[in-house]
Length: 312
Image 1: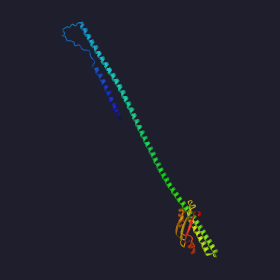
Image 2 (image 1 turned 180 degrees about the horizontal axis):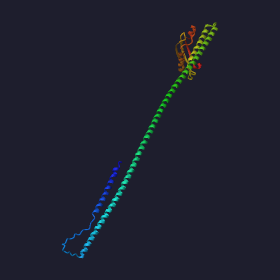
Image 3 (image 1 turned 90 degrees about the horizontal axis):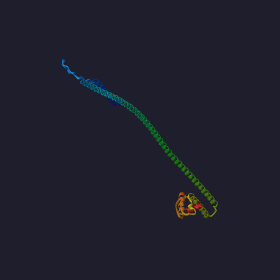
Image 4 (image 1 turned 60 degrees about the vertical axis):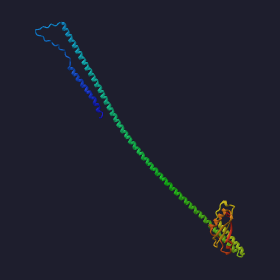
């Protein structure tokens, strides 16, 4: 592993210290002080040396002192060796403890590294899962947005179709109303025409019944009849409203032999009634006329007073 080189250095130092202690022990054992050898003065065999007792005692004391000094030195050396050995043992034990502690730290660090790696893997897995969930959520949001847009488009299309149908229905209703109004107007015109024919027939019948009457009376009657018919025609085409009530307009009308209106002119009266009268006469186009020349001459140019109250 990556941390093994750091542990090899303390182990090497411990081994060197142990070797050094052993070497010192060996060297101290070989260097024990030996008793000093007092050199013997060689004397001639024939020469006698006389040594006093005090000199001998001094020599003995000296030897004893040297021996004690040597023993003390040896003891000091032994104590020093023991101290060094104890120190080396303690250093070795401390080094072993330190190595053990380092090993424990290495194991702890390795454990923490493994835990960190596992945590990183777990975090990466969690991040991947969160990304997948986020992607799923985004896909769902896009799908819902697509569905919403489709629904809005369908609703818009349905609204447009409904408007078209409503417009078509309104157009159809307007067409039905227009046709109904046209039919009502046609029926009214037909009724007026029938009434006019009835009046004409009645007038003809009256004329035939009064053949023996004076021609002038017949002429007046015929003129009055056609004047009534002309008024009825104008009434049928006159559009009135409440603002016209109580008002009137005097108009001049010129007719061709076939009843075609060749001229119309207002001679005085309410402007609104006058405009309505001109419009009604122009809309009629042709007015009832008699085939009798003398009756036509009386009606060729006539003045009429148009009054909505009379017509309503």
